[in-house]
Length: 173
Image (tube, rainbow, N blue to C red; front, side):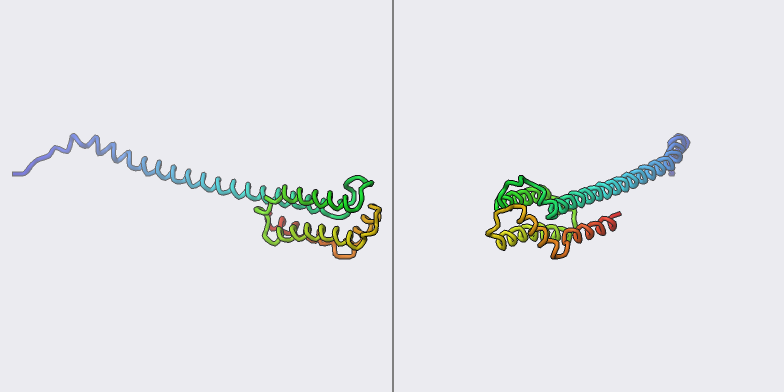
C-alpha cells in the first residue's frame, strides 16, 4: 500500500519559497557589500586621521626646533639678567617645552625623534660650554654674542633636522 500525498496544498508554499530565495540571496549580497564598503571607509578615515596626527606632530616639533635655534633663544628674557640667570631660564624653558611636546614622538620616525632630542641636548650643552669658557664675563650681551658665534661655527644642525623632517612629510603625502 502506497501512501498518497497530496502536494497541491504545498504549491503555494513552494512558490513563495522559490520567490523568496533569490530575494534573500540578493539581500545577503547587498548587506555583505555594504559592510565591506563601511569597513573600507573606516580604514580610510583611520589613515587620514593618522596622517593628520603625524603632520601635526611634525608641525609642533618644527616649531620647537625653530624656538630652539640660538638666534631665537637670545631674544628671550630681560637684558638685565646675568649670564648664569639667562642660562637657567633658557634651559628651564627648553626643557618645559620639550616635555610639553614629548608625546609627539609617537607620530615621528624614531630617527627624527632622536635628532630632536640630540638638538635639544646640543643646544643646552653649548649654553653651558659657552658659559664655562666665559666664566669671567658678566655682560649678558657679550655672552649671547659668543653663544651665537659658537653655534654658527658648527653646522646649523637644527636646520638640517628641519630639512630632514620636510623630507619625512613629503613621504607621508
